[in-house]
Image (cartoon, rainbow, N blue to C red):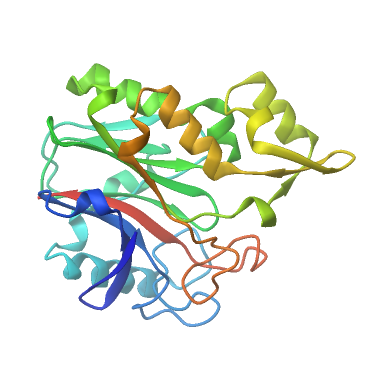
Length: 264
């Protein structure tokens, strides 16, 4: 992925997004108005950053893509598996801020759908034939519960998408070398999905390093997305303080970056 400057902001752009009638990528923490520790492009309202700062940052993001802030759609993420479907025009998207969901799919042009993260993985999915976009918030709970497969299933059921036509991008998240988990996480994966044996490495009794990026990749492939149509960011949010917010690194006092798609 390459870093692109758009207006005041910078974002990582998957290679497949070039040449398509869309904008897609993963924002960095730079280009906003928030003060430390939320400096500077904090896009998440669920922080202690003053609301007017977050609103200013979201305005910066929207303006960079010639949108109004009301055309930016984010939801109340709860580490579940509900998928919000937007299949009709909405004059104002701000009311979706209170809708509990962890994935959004749409065929509507002119709106930016996004998921907010600060160590969890943002996953973008796009069907160039059907012109349908999906954004997915993947933490360990969502990975264990199979949220990626559920999102792709919803794209197939509601918009007639076919998995083999999908393009996918896994954004920056916390690397396995910085992410240790305990038995409840292991139990959730063993009871659900997410390929525990392939993504977990035991480092001590009852403690494992978890590779969430690999879980995302394996889940996309299992759902039918072709390996050559999946791209993944290499950066670890915990390691790259200059580029990304990290919940674990900053002990919760941090902002949120956005994984987004805008169908033009």
